[in-house]
Image (cartoon, rainbow, N blue to C red; front, side):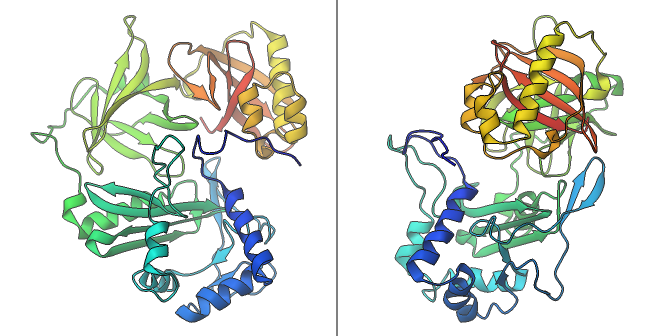
Length: 416
């Protein structure tokens, strides 16, 4: 299968599981050994990592954890996947004790030389000189001016994080067997803050005083916001304020410090509701602990708060259904479907299982978001449609992002 380039080489950075899978294939070709044998001989055995191996779904592994996924409000068991499908990106079974041995080796020349380690932890640069913030398999950044080298991962009901703070001689490793709620990176930085007070959130000026607002105002603020492109921030009413949740983590509590301003104490993040002249909520002003500020657009309300609207364009719904079926089938079908935007076609990687066996698509509502600055897959979003989707085995809620030309730029399957 021929896949088009996402961008000209050297012009953009995008994390890629496929890139790591290709590296595993190169290792096998150059070494003449299997990927598993190569890692065992070069890394696992020299470091005494006796509990670490490359995944074999048929092997009996003592004390092996079961991957779980939180979906549709309940835990579900994840079935094993092919051992070669994610060989270079997600195939290693290990323990925190063994990973601590790996981490300790990174302060020595036992496996990698100082030159290799320095190269690994140096951010790559694009052709125009822009730093990507990513080295060789590590994100490179800083937290409160403390060097912060880290990586997160999630696959098939498991999540993992390794966070190194070399200035402080501290490493935190987090492994969990449940994806959908457990935020391993947040856990890791939270643990690190217990040992390194200097990276704890700084209160900008005087500590805010929490207010008690009329809870009836919270539903108007609830909804989804575009934290980054293709990455949603969901707000729901809470007992003491608002609850804000990013994908793959649990909700954080944002306490009111003003009529429309809320503060999250753990990370020192302020959010302020943004409204247009008509009083409609159109976004959030986000101020990070380091003082960096930005405005993020509102995607729209939660499903349960919607008032059903008549479908003003049934033919459009039919075109959307055709596009969803194509996305559930594969790259060939997506490439041939005239209802899918070029940017989405270009960045389509694998079929969406939520759309397989689609039998019914019922229109619920539409939200005009033109001018809010929402982009999905390099396509400007003009309208978001809310649908109830029924397949052979499930009923789901789906957001469909349309361009001004009514082409599908993206989709999100959500619980509410």
